[in-house]
Length: 285
Ligand SMILES: NC(=O)c1ccc[n+]([C@@H]2O[C@H](COP(=O)([O-])OP(=O)(O)OC[C@H]3O[C@@H](n4cnc5c(N)ncnc54)[C@H](OP(=O)(O)O)[C@@H]3O)[C@@H](O)[C@H]2O)c1
Picture 1 (cartoon, rainbow, N blue to C red):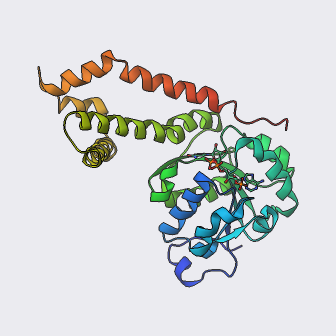
Picture 2 (picture 1 turned 90 degrees about the vertical axis):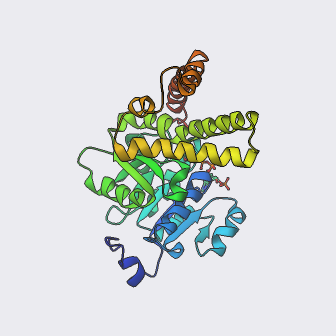
Picture 3 (picture 1 turned 180 degrees about the vertical axis):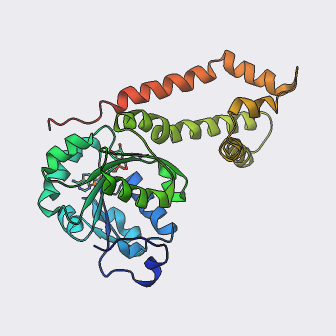
């Protein structure tokens, strides 16, 4: 397959067959598909989506995606194969497609929690480049924090992973051993921050705002806080210092939250998620 190297080639020399297959189009697969098209780098017709209950992809078929219930056919039509099934379904899918994988053509990218590159390559049993990616569902809005890992020196796998996931947010390459912690911090983490936004909005309702207003105000405030950290590159505590006047209302609220275990709850939740993420995949199925 041709390389997909410039933003403009997707508009001018799009190949006749789709080039990226997502096997297992559930929550994350669907979000990724939408984000890739939103990037402008991929047309819907460049992306093949599979799941067994293919009827549930009818809306995506209407948008121009190719939808199939056949992983092998999807693999044969693509050069990049993103595997996005649940961990316990992974081995079966890899064994199903291995005959169709061509080392000259394919790169496999897995978003599956806990499954190592070595374990996946053992299932494929061929010299196919494999990389892992840990995105979150904000890929749909091109705002994911996605951690990537490949075997040391496997530039083809890492390069392909970057080519895909750079379109849908920020990426960082990490050692593979850190992929489980990355799952907890970045993939599960999205839910943790969403729950924080919900909690803030509930507080807002109690002090007088209508629910819709409270939610918008809480979410935009969270967005502003994240932007202060990311855009200025400063530690959160420095930004907190800028809004806490002595004997003021901010420090009073913050200290009350800490007395109730706010930071401790977040830390313990992330550690618990990391432990759980480490045990989701087994090679013995
Ligand atoms: N959700 C997240 O935020 C997130 C973030 C990062 C990574 N992940 C990882 O991504 C994977 C999927 O998570 P998810 O939340 O998207 O789960 P999900 O919504 O359950 O999606 C999994 C999909 O795989 C399909 N599937 C199952 N067996 C299949 C097969 N043999 N061939 C083709 N499709 C098959 C299922 O549809 P059918 O039953 O119709 O086949 C389902 O739609 C997990 O390994 C998870 O750890 C998820």
